[in-house]
Image 1 (cartoon, rainbow over the protein chains, first blue to last red):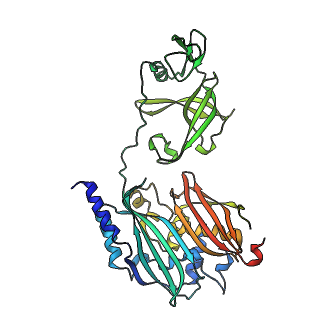
Image 2 (image 1 turned 120 degrees about the vertical axis):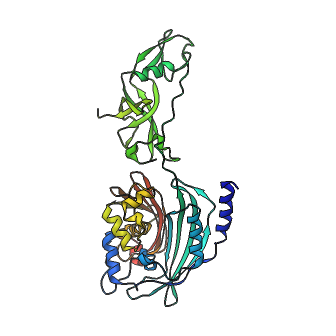
Image 3 (image 1 turned 180 degrees about the horizontal axis):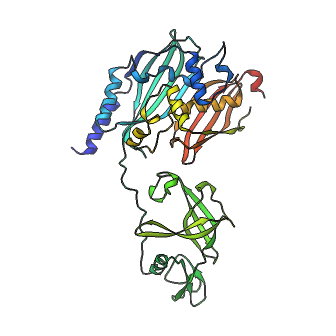
Length: 308
Length: 132
């Protein structure tokens, strides 16, 4: 049986958990109380006076906190939920991250309220691959009651996943060097940015081409760029994330800016804008050529923001 | 209060203390929220903020703006990129719709690597204040 089939089979089994209870008549470990409210407000820097004094209510967003099992776990958790998590663990989906939380507050909770809750497994997704890894989204819906009366609804989604392997840093793609552009890459190897010039009409061109767009002339020589330029236009790449194009200081696969740089000589070239956060890149930003070494086989001309 | 009205941004310095204190105040003892070594073993570069803290901060952002008489009815959030120690999360928001004394506020929290949280908060204001 292939891995793919095994995963599909697991997916089918997981789907059957939808509708099964995850907790029945779970009880909050503590009644709603002023010390826990105070600790929450201190931690979050919440100075709302509604949460202190004799008429205090609990911050509504504490709803889930009152249902948490803490270090000693839950009473009231059903076999179904443990079985579901166990199946996922056994399949390699050992990591968990919360992705969504939707809460509805029906009435304020006050110190002394004793919370009881029921949780149902609402949905288990098909197998999904995310940036973190591959796994399954599990959605639960919890109804919270006090004295038999509903006080809040809490829908929660987690991703149970197998972490994506963290191999060595993804290398940048290599340039495709051919007869028409070999001179350009030879220049880069010597840390010179060479612009092609038509020897018939003198027109500069970039990227390198076999003939002149202005006069059709096949003959050319080169001019070395001064390295001064400005951002003529740019885009910021957010998704999909390509770790190979991200500066390490910007996170494993964070956004990065791709600039269309207008060189002082008048031609434009596409390159990265570096040394400035991606969201600070602007049209007209003065930049200067630098040769950045990405790995032992790859050095590229990129452009650094400069104060001018 | 009218649709389209922006809320002033709120900057939250994401300190290690905030992450740990928020996790413990919400009774969330998952190791990735307090133990950097175990967080790294699980593929994260460092500890990261738990969803309950983010949820609480989104609620706080809205009640800070509308005042203590504002009552939260719903908070629905989705997480994106994590909040790690050293990050600054900037919460921004705008009133999306108003129905009588109830408003739906759209909230976004961003840090240097992208969007940490997007969500909507439904909040009710006392009659007098809703008319402002």
